[in-house]
Length: 107
Image (cartoon, rainbow, N blue to C red; front, side, top):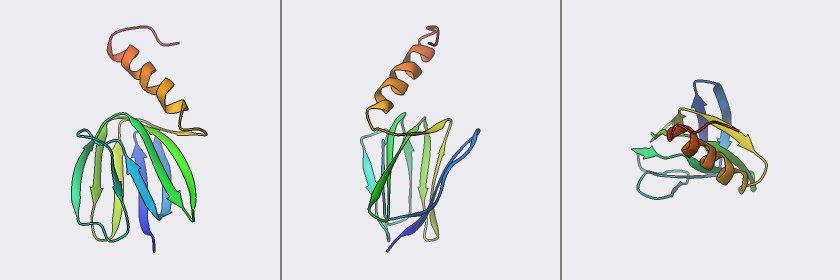
């Protein structure tokens, strides 16, 4: 069983398709969404979002935003999103975001 899932940012769609499971960096701690999840809206913080599709995991760095679960689909609306190859890459992107927020110069 799967559900329709999208990651949307001002830069466009980072992901759109069927997902078996989504793990997101919630503002109050990480959480997961499975098919049939109750409707909800949750704040997300910058971090690693993992999407399981047909048993394979895909990783995304996602910025601040909200995740909405309804009966038809799950949508993650964030201020930035980027596909990453390895989960560890998210740490460097989070550190870069903190530098930018603190007024530091980007690499």
